[in-house]
Length: 122
Image 1: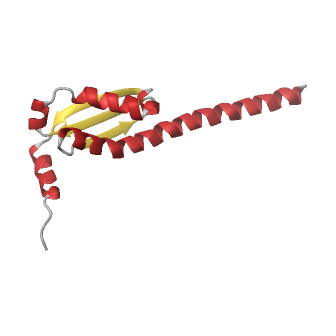
Image 2 (image 1 turned 180 degrees about the vertical axis):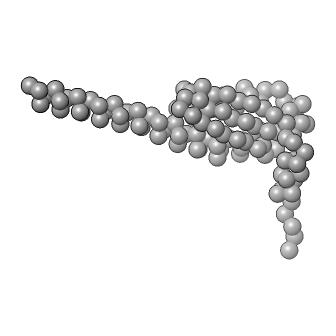
């Protein structure tokens, strides 16, 4: 009888560890995909490629999105757009606490982005 309970405990512990491991994998994988697809989506919606910083802990995701001041003045609904995008396409990421911080690009960031967009002619 002792062997049975020991085996049952071992199988239950292994199943629980596998379950939580898969949940963590899906969340991390979703965050990686989100960090790659969100800038392209926002570029298509607002016409400017934003600078995005993504930080994730166990149940907390922090997004810092930087647009130029012109875009921030024109559009007040950027945070709602990002939340809807995450809810629609990344539900495993939406289950954790998501903090979205919308900021204006600094002058040096804006100059850096403009230099990257200009393609020199050969």
